[in-house]
View 1 (cartoon, one colour):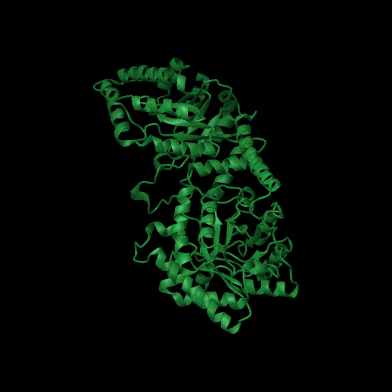
View 2: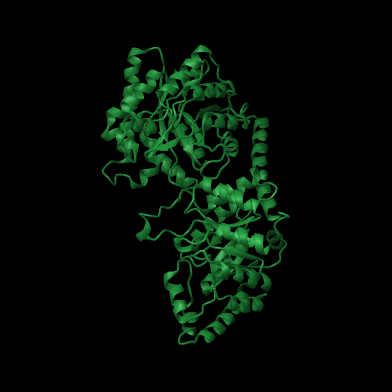
Length: 623
């Protein structure tokens, strides 16, 4: 029986969690990649499939969720992704075959389960998915679930690919959203739904993981799905976990879960199931509740090809509305009346921003004095690095709040993706907004030094472009009255500058309005700056850093990533005294500023060695 025929009669009930239940059943086995159990402990995986089927699940997921994230190390341990997928498919198929021998009249479905691929965009994501999908298709899969996703990259392409290979395939897409409706990749769930409901090849869309059932019910109520032509699927977590003895534990609340899921079914969700923390008792309770008081699922109105003109126009308007809302949020951030820095920049006046590094100890008198002197010198903003070179310093956002509050200055704290996840990032943005800090510079962050990686872990789950998208989505939803102006970085000294431009284009698409460049210290860097001016629709702040000595010039050239100092400049500093070095620095920066003047919207100066007096001289020369 086709799933569509099944869904005319009743909701399709999925299984619950594989990973958390496997750990619950076999404590002490802390294998990082549970998909490996398909090979090293197949009886454990098969037994869990059977338990869910006996509990009443009509659809089960293959134990392959994580293969999409560790496929980059494919076969490194002799256990290839293809081998794991095939083993996972065989275990699920064997469990269904055994169950149907005793229940021949009950149809069951096996879904090829795939989580998010390694962070990528568009074609890169599609290519990663295609490799995995081809294995499943060869196994005989005709039902696919892409779950716990952070964005929509590659989904339209892979759905079209599957349907061409297997026209009868049934494709579900599910996003992991927080109680506020955001994915870990910074996308708003409602916007993702609006985007993907236009894709004919996708049969069902919904939410799973991260949130409990009541929060996903609230997200479902925000969707305009009745005429979307899509089945709605909802698979929440059991609730919210606690950690006991280093283990993540979910409370046994299957009755509460089933009651909430019944409400979700009454709202029209046709496909139900569970995610983290849901074991067979949750599925059994939900099945019993649905059998006692059946809820007929909402069948989506089919979209027949070719689309009627009116439908095309409606979809076009919806897409245009989404785009206008996004563009409007970016434009509003640029024109925010509470943001004098943004106003000046967008009105075409040249601005000057000076970077101050935060201290490594809780002594900030020198830092605050420097900021105050820069204010007196007339700079338009202070930008504060976020633990540069991955070394712990006073938090840039806390310093930004202090400077804004006590000195009344515009501050632009750097915000990296290295040290905090998306929840921590949102919490930080909420605090900054309350404090009146409404400019941020998004950067991926310097990598942690190799010698410290055992003790210091990074959180590179998303890059600066995705962080920018998250902030601009929050501008639409959370900060409409006082949005952030989002800035980004551009390495004009990169060997492959074409790649830098492509990445900058992605940042701009995601809402970056201003690019701060690395220091311009070569003719090549200047030419790349000119090229940026002609190719990118963005405000540019040309980077400059004074060289103060021969040793300083050599250090920047050879040991600081992203900075390239022309050999002629390096030689100018040979055998110069401190005083002579500073005189030369003022002269060189003044000349660089003159050369870039016609190609930038302002200047971005980096303070060397806390030499505020030197920067004051330079500021007088370039203003």
